[in-house]
Image 1 (cartoon, each protein chain N blue to C red):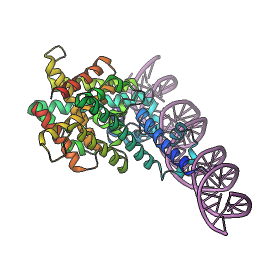
Image 2: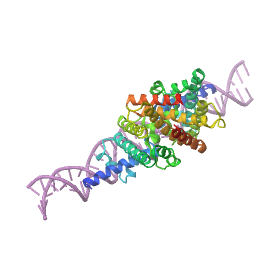
Image 3: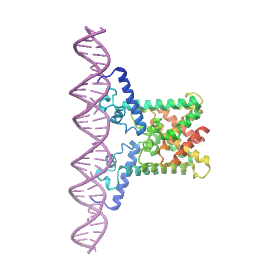
Image 4: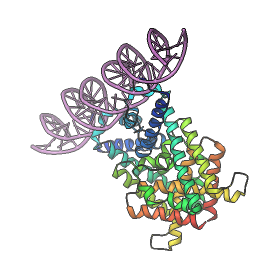
Length: 185
Length: 185
DNA sequence: TGTACATCAGTGAACGCGCGTTCACTGATGTAC
DNA sequence: TGTACATCAGTGAACGCGCGTTCACTGATGTAC
């Protein structure tokens, strides 16, 4: 059953991708090794050929999800600037996606209690989101840096709340209010 | 072992309170019946004398946490107006509390995937937070209503992100930026 | 008001199940000659 | 380049454990007379 080096690397990647998707769909606690491995088309026993333990997988999966979410933000920025990035992130399509894009909104509160490696991966995502939306490094104009930080908080918070709320009208209103607020400022 | 009516009601309340605290400390998935009942000083077998099932407990616990968080917000508002409520919510003390206050920030992303009763309880908390910070009902000045909605999103998002991030300086910066943003607007 | 019985809050054992992790085994790949 | 052997990716069974839920049992409370 031994696989070639490339096949082995591909397997590993597909496991991380399966975990990343499953986490954003159903949360950190539902991403069990059996669920993740099954989604990658494998049995759970082979997991430890690739990873030290489950914590390592969660950290790598959160890093991958963060990169995926940032890639979409960069695409929006390139195509239509900051406003398109905001509108895309705070869209009904993003809110309702079967597999959500942003791990900060999908599993933010769980990540706050996750292992340090997972939190470090999420921290990197937060930093890059701030830089992407602010366009400035930390030493540039303080006001716009702090506006970018608050803006990321508003985006993550609004998307999370819009998914919690059972009333569709209120959910839409939350997204619209956050968009209006971020595009006006 | 039968208890008086008052004692029975007291037991039930203490179980919901234990669940509410445990949920905000360790998340929805860690609030197992055994953990909750032990925290309330009981064995797990008696649970079903008081509740239909675990979902009902989670919904009631989220409702209780929401009321607790709102009570603190109302206290702040009465004592020092909107700015004191914002500063209190976005304080390092709230971020670092062993038992956090706000269920939306503590378990927001998990609540989005929880049972409908739990989500309905959280929805009520969101609505009341918006009304408390906006001060207006839905039919008043549209701008201030939408500012209140975006403000709640900023507060919940900033507190959540400040707890995810492993870098204390960035964590402080997130809280400070959100405070500045909400007090300036 | 006092007694006899029914109710039921809480205990602790048990159920079937899914969890993370380990391990003996398999057979194809990689390596040494 | 061809052969012989070592490596190791993936399988599937097994481990001890905690989960939500059920249940027979206990004894104090509530109720009927």
